Amino acid sequence: MKEFDIEERVKLAVQNFESGFNCAQSVFLAYSDVFELNLDMAKQMSVSFGGGVGRMREVCGTVSAMAMLAGFKYPVLDQNDQEARTKNYGMVQKMAELFKEQHGTIICRSLLPAAEASQTTPAPSARTAEYYAKRPCSKYVETAARIAGRMLKNELD
Image 1 (cartoon, rainbow, N blue to C red):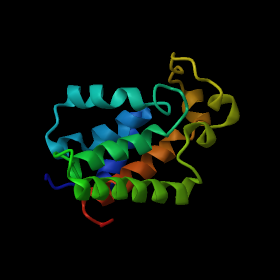
Image 2 (cartoon, helix red, strand yellow):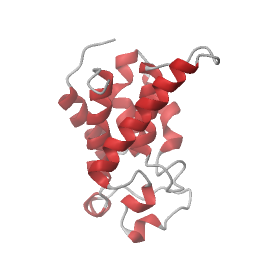
Image 3 (cartoon, rainbow, N blue to C red):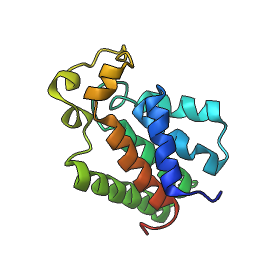
Image 4 (cartoon, one colour):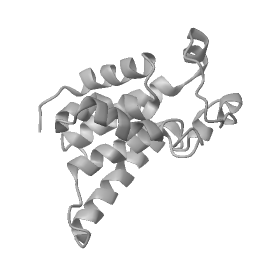
């Protein structure tokens, strides 16, 4: 696995978000090169998890991105390998718990201001200065990118 600095990746994830990528993409793309993933493929793999999965405001996209990264770090290549599956699921649960400790939940609609949480139409919000000023998602991107980095560096084992 490619070497990286966690705090540099955290900054990259926030920059990704502030440049227009959704929450899931922002975290996932910050680490996709660690696994030598093609950037366009990484964008495609992670896009649908934004806004709490397809903007339905369910599990926060940043948490979904952490889970996707755990799939690369702790793969289950044999469908009958229960030990590998247990390790993967255990890591996903650990990362989600760390996120919850900082933000109280992993549910998008509970993390957003009420007016934003109720917006579930498929059309994304325009990325304006006002959007970034009222949207707390940058801090969730930061938290998830830091937790994911710690997981990838074996600091959560």
